Each structure stands twice: as structure tokens, then as C-alpha cells.
Image (cartoon, rainbow, N blue to C red; front, top):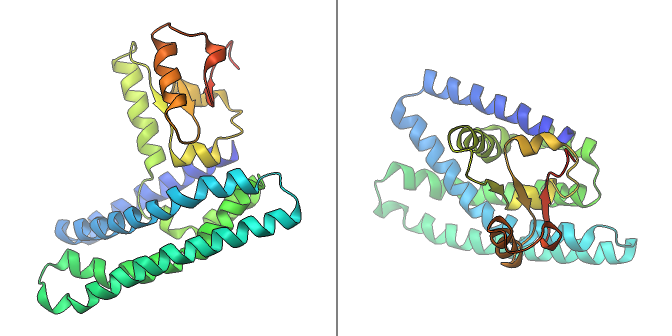
Length: 235
């Protein structure tokens, strides 16, 4: 509940930010702003995809010694990925004199430092997720997750899309998966999520999706679903 409340606040802040941008900047300048953020988000998605779910999976419930080993490995891999991005960014800086594209110039100037500056915040947040310290997650994201408040988050958009689909095409089954449910909905307890989605799947691999398709087709029983949340009798 706290996590959903947190994301709701961030969505409101994102909408307010979007209003301010379109009110005080030109359409071209606002477009450049979103382009740069999208490019940064694309690079961060690589780090998140490699490490976020793995951190939660291997760190949660471990003893102190193994937990320190897991976090050490996470830091090492995260730094390695960041170095790769910084090297690519360095090559881009050398090529700046040969381009006049303003969007590309902004990306090259800011991608490296932005990507590197978010590294500590990401690792700390993944640890809080693994320890299920949701109150601290809420405060931490509000204090340190400024990048998450810049624009309306994918979560808000996903819920709105799901709401529209269920209203206009009630026969269509809607499922949610990916990074957010993998890390923040592993202990799903609020049934209101299923007012928007029929299913919430966790983790990587084809098995959850394959079994979900088979279940929708009536080929298997609900008990055979893998790592999938579904609402049964209001629970």
C-alpha cells in the first residue's frame, strides 16, 4: 500500500513538472528535455535489468556474511557497467565538434555524469527492497529519487492504459510484469491492483508467460501458474 501511495505521489509531481515545463519552455525545449531523460532512462534500464531483480533475489533472507558478499558483487558489477557507459560517453565527447544536433549534444554532455551519480542511490534502494523496509523506501525515494519525479512514471501510464483496456475491451486479459512488480510487488497484498490487471507476473523466463497463456486458453488449472498473482474470491 505504501509503495503504491509513493508512486501515486510521484505521478502527481510528474504531472505538475510536465505542466511547468510546457508552460515556461517552448515545445522544442520541452521535447529536448524529455529526449535526454529518455536516453538516460534507456541506459539505466540496462543496469536495472541486470542487477535489480538479482539483488532482491539473492540478498533477501540471507545471513549477514552472505549478504555482504552479494552486495559486494552487486557494487562490482554496477561499477563495471558504469565504466562501460562512461567510456562510451568519453568517445562521444571527442565527437562533439562534428555534430550540430542539439539533442545529441545534450545527451553526450549529461549522460555520463547522470548515470554515474544515480549508482549509489540505485544500489541502496535495491537493498531496501530486498530487506522489505517499505517505509524507508518511501522516504528514500522522496528524498533521493528526484529523477523518478521528473516525469509521469511508467507505472502511472501502465495503470491508466490497463484501466482504459478493461473499460473498453472487457474480454481482453491484462497482465503486468517487468522491473516494477519484480522488485516492489513481490509481497502483493492490496487487491485493488486487480481492478486494473488480471495477472501480475514475476521474474524472467518464458515459463510464467507460457503457463499464463495456457491458463487463459483453459488448458491448465490456476494452481499450475508459475510466479503469477491472480485474484481469487477477492484475495
